[in-house]
Length: 345
Image (cartoon, rainbow, N blue to C red):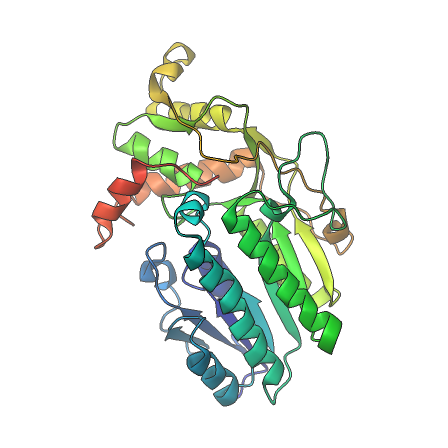
C-alpha cells in the first residue's frame, strides 16, 4: 500500500508520544506512522494496544542514540514528518545522572538531526518537543518565545542544549525545524513519577501525598489531547524556523492540587485534608512557576479545549479504573521505590 505521508515519532510509546501516535494513526489511515522507542521504564506497550494491528502503524524498538538504526530508518523509509519526543524527563534523576540525560536528550537529538538532514528524501518538518522549563523560574514575568533561556536544572539544560542543536540546522542548512515549549502535560497513562499520577497512586495505596518543601510552587497544566492538537496544527500551519509556546492559563498550586485529588479520591471533608498531606525535603534549585504566553500559537487558531475540571476528572477516573496499568509489570518494585522519592513537577 502506498501512503500519502510517512511520519516518524520518536518516544512514541511514552505518555505524550503514545497519545500523539494513536491520534495520527486514527485520524490519518492514509499515512504511515512509525514509532521509534526503546521501551524505557516509563513506557508501556499497553498504551498502544488499540492501534498495534492497524496497517498504517509500524513499531521499531530501538535507541534514538543508535546512529546505525536511525540512519537505516531514513534510508529505507521516505520520512516526511518527524516528531522528536524521545527524552529523559525526570528532574530529580537529572541531578543524580546528568550524563544519561546529556546522552539521550542532546546526543539523541544530534543523531536524529544528522540522519534526517542527510536523507535523500528531504523531510517537510522536524518538530522538536521541548519544555517550558528551559525558561527557568518565572515569578511576575510571563515568558514568550523571545524570552531568554535560563534552565535551572540538568534536565532543562539538556533540553535547551538540544534546542540550540535543532536551531543550528535551521540557521546553517535551512532545515525545516519547529520547536515547541509546553506546560506540564497531564492525562491518562502518564507514568507515576510525575506529580498527578504520583499523588493518585499514593492515594490509591492509602498513603499521603508527599509535597516537596513549603515554598508556594505552582504549575500550569495542559491536558494531553490539547497538546496533541497543538502539535498537529503546527505540523500543518507552523512556520519553519520558529518556536511556539504551548500553554494554558490554568495555574494550580501544588498544595491545592494535592487537596483536590484527596477530595476526589478519598471524599473526605475539608477539615481532614491536611491528614493526607506530608511535606518532605525540597529538591535543589526548584523553580516556583513557569508562566508562558501562547499567543503566537493561538494566532494559528489553537485554543485549549479541555478545562481543568474536565481534564482532572477524566484523569482521576482513568487511574481509578486502571490501578494495575503500571504495577502489574516487571517494574512494580521500581514504581514502589519511586513513590518513596520525589515527584517530578
